[in-house]
Image (cartoon, rainbow, N blue to C red; front, side):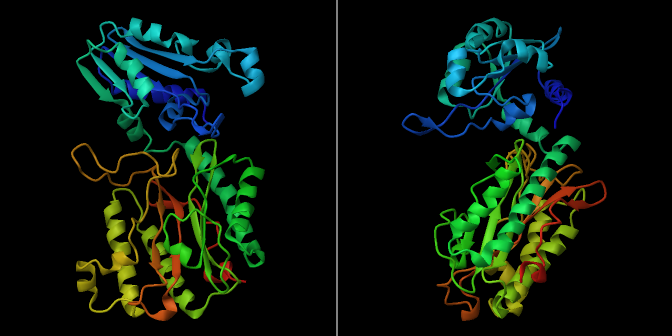
Length: 422
């Protein structure tokens, strides 16, 4: 778990980068309506959670930086026995004062009074430009005299690029749960008739092991469905002798895992499936070995495209020389996406890929990213040899950048040909 001291240290680090005579405000997420009078399960705003570790809605954090020092104030929803009977317990002001390392805690309903008070003599206001309209309206109500308004989200997201030891442990735990879920899917695949049956097996493990939420909507794509990159219907029957692309990961204490495995529906690969799978797996291993500090993601991308394009030519799926195929981006038809993305509090972690000047940020110790090469050959692609049509393969692991190289956090999840066959 992440300590209150670590959250306090994050707030201090953020404040060190802020201007004097500034006020920063971050809000919790709001409940989101599902239908009529029901809401989706609440999930805290990632930036707010990164700085507080607080999981309740109707809360806010104010950071005041003056020449006299930095002051932090947390606003939490009041305790109300009748409301708690319907919607669950609240921490409340008094218990929040005991838990959080802030200068003071107030009721959320008094936030407007505090904003009016603390915005006096403020010259710079920081808030998240992505706020919903009601919160923006509240902030701007008291900021008419402030000449500089800046987006705090970008500063927090930049901090989130480098993961602490505590964050890495939470991600490792999420991946360990996801490992068990994928292995269960591999064991159960032969006995499942529909995609949603496998989805149920996976998400059963998530819940059983204490990961109360998916990191994203699970993809269980059999046959040609795997060639729809964000296929989430998961409602089709599983074709005989097809592959099943499973992209599923849990979230544990707000930290994500993101794993893709592609398995044979009936326990064995056809020769064509084996050829494509071996190509993707070989490319993934080579790209992972490239990871170390100072390497650019664009270098990983370029090499993954070169290797996949070369393999497609060798299999007769693409024609001509490697150089011409790459120049004309012929491989993009079969490999249209990036090699990977940052991962953390969000499965696609909202951290920057470039500096303010547009320069690419190189890999650094403590970053976590996915590596996920793939090939997608649609069943209606008449330009591809018939034996390869309708096959979609992606293999994805979660990689931590270390001081001298990398650590594959999901190394224990089976992916070798003989491991995912039976």
